[in-house]
Length: 104
Image (cartoon, rainbow, N blue to C red; front, side, top):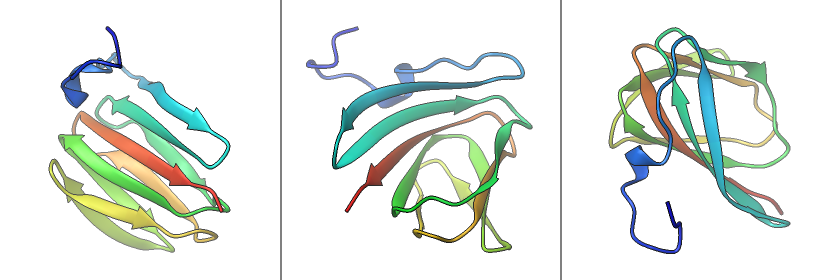
């Protein structure tokens, strides 16, 4: 797959049983764009990041917890993960997301 051509975002990563799969599309000093596929029940444990990040849900639904507050985010929706705030993700069903991290 050539990323210089038009591609369907949801086709850039495939689901794998009991796994989280990721593919970095852009990695620069000032930011990254990564596509993830989470099998149902998989997630990312609570952590913080020094930079703001944008999560765009491409397929399925996830629970996004920011500073202890739960948000159900579905395909076509997005949420901002603020810098320095603890956050975690859990797949309510299989889901795919694009993570855009902007570094200052």
